Length: 490
Image 1 (cartoon, rainbow, N blue to C red):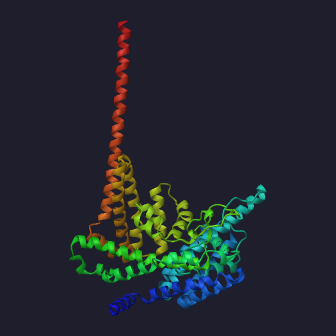
Image 2 (cartoon, helix red, strand yellow):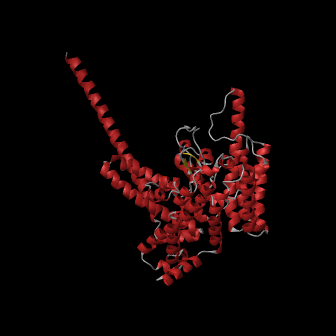
Image 3 (cartoon, rainbow, N blue to C red):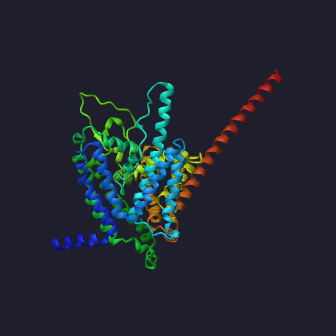
């Protein structure tokens, strides 16, 4: 039995690619190293985190590390040249550079490594966020001068960062290629923590890691018996429809387990270093940090949390009812970034179109593969479908009916994410459409049917209201005529 277990574990390890093993090694090493960063002073902590991050970048990216450096220097020039326009210009600059980064082979340059891609993605988020923070700092400073009062804004910068500060933030080893995303102010608060050793560490770190072995084992086992490559074979199409439909459920399960393990491990690396540790009273948000100015009572022990760097909520991801809510609990720090820097600046006003625009930007940020766009742009359709059904069906049901509706809604939500995940992992438009064709575009059809049904129900309701109004008008006319007859008789 022991020999069989040992063979199975080694077989699972062999299923992992060399890149995944490097990621695993970096994640595993960052957790014990993080505890060492609770000891040094702010300048030493900043320099050591920068040196370690640069070492990881150069070791895994080699010459491709220059891409990230060019991105940082370009953003610094933009901020120094025009802080007012820095958010828009930095977004344009980093996203255009992402396009060049992904098409470098067109210019005769060698393709970047997957590690360089991961660093570039997170760096793009950091640079856009930093430009927004600098703009807010200058605007708050001008307001303070004109009003002679301190700005009430929570979590604002106290000074504009130098080039060294920007580079140190960009290459800080914490989450450098695995995430989570965190703002520059969160990074500064980490450097200036007055008593890092007194902050919680081992307990929250172990709590975050307790299910990682389970997630990892489930990922490796399911991936071994249900490989994604099988979907691309002709043999796959010979199976029954329900088998083909079931396969996407397993693929999404493998996808979730992989990221649950990776992101929980990445969060543990932040927790061990003390990054993103704030009092619970600060009401921190993933990615954004504190939302209120909190002054703890000196007589009451302060309770801390690490919500600022929380990137995944596995339970709510699996068991929340709605498609729109599922996005809130997945890659949470990036969702915060999209919600604050992309969604409000959408060129559209309608919610569905704004959501579609945000999903399009998210797809572009992930890459140029058509599968990303096919998947992300299906989300607004699913959201429109669930909104239509909630308004036309759920709102008319009683408590038991609504509970049954929610269970069906949850089941369809999970199948929708299964369906969209196939585009995300198959990447190519031909492979994605080929698979969706094999299951007759079932989620698209269900979503469109729900929208049509919701509109018909809404239209019927309008007709009912209209007929009731017409009957009322006719009744009033009859009463008027009867009064006229009475007057003439009198």
